[in-house]
Length: 198
Image 1 (cartoon, rainbow, N blue to C red):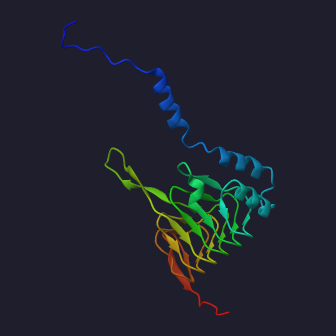
Image 2: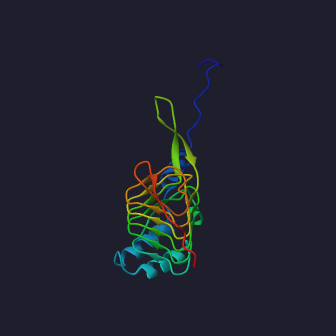
Image 3: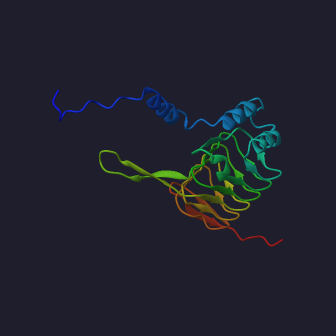
């Protein structure tokens, strides 16, 4: 062997294994799995206040009187529990998805319909070799008293105004003004409400 050739660097098998395990287990959240197991013991559509109490004990910020009708699908980076803030007297339907890569704030008295999706992350458009480019994150805000209909999708960076209604199946890609109803994909204003004065 000549003096200019070098020996390959020794591979630290233990370090490589630790790195692989860390990459594969980053998305495992023990508290979330515990919450899921406990919530599945409660019948879907019932025990909403008890389910909310269990989720509160596990670290979610759910306001008093909030009802969780079925275990929501929660995902996000480590520590994502702190990215959800739900006000008092809210209702969260069954099979909702909350992407907690960024903050989701739900105002008091809001209702999130069954299978609604609140998403805080997406991708930039990448080059032709890989169109899903870099991840982008932006918070989602649902105003006080708003109603997100079943299977509606709210995209990153959107604010749904106070007292607004997002109809079932709508795709919301821009802010919704307060006291309006939006429908369609993409969602457009189809009705304006007169705010009631109490």
